[in-house]
Image 1 (cartoon, rainbow, N blue to C red):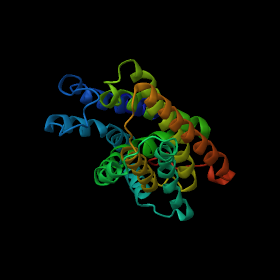
Image 2 (cartoon, rainbow, N blue to C red):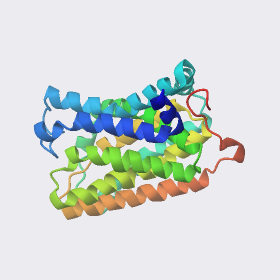
Image 3 (cartoon, one colour):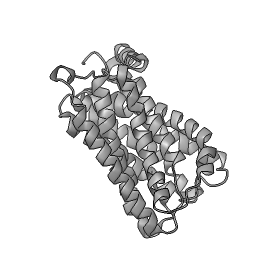
Length: 283
């Protein structure tokens, strides 16, 4: 088949096209039925919720679907083995890195004299965990299940991590962020770049290093993603003005990059650990 031959030759392009195509098309009706920036306020309608969650499945559907299409049962078995691989040793502690980094922002806000509603954060723990689990399962079979290992076949780890951040945070989340930030007017674009491309690319560095040290464990990748979504939702703050929000979001991104770069430099794997699995028999 010509399509399969093309996808085998260009698996990264095929994955990006399928992921963005699915999610962007599914989310398109939200522009007409959901108020931008207010989608998490009150109780969203069943139609809004259905479209939101269906669109979130894009990365997993593309990752698992392409694995089955290109590599068959052996590819799916390899993906399943990575999902069950819990042999991470001390790397389980990496699950604390991103939540602790997120926690720095409300701490710094409090130290600077700004009000921080700890009660509101505690009230969000349950919903945040549910959102985090769904996001991890819906996204990681694509980002670290398919895209990253295929990029690592031809790119150095740093380049691969940055490219995943570009697609994940810049393109995919950049589109989705409109529904959460679309009421910010002129500030939407800089906030979108900071929260999407800036923040998630920093996290991509950390997840790539963990991936390299755990034989591409998809289980740990999913749990790392849960920690990102959970922490972002719990530590979300209310700001006095758009300028205040931009300033503190930039501080948050700066902290994330300091932590990510430090983590990247401190956890350089041995040469033997550079080889990472690719879904399917081609790996």
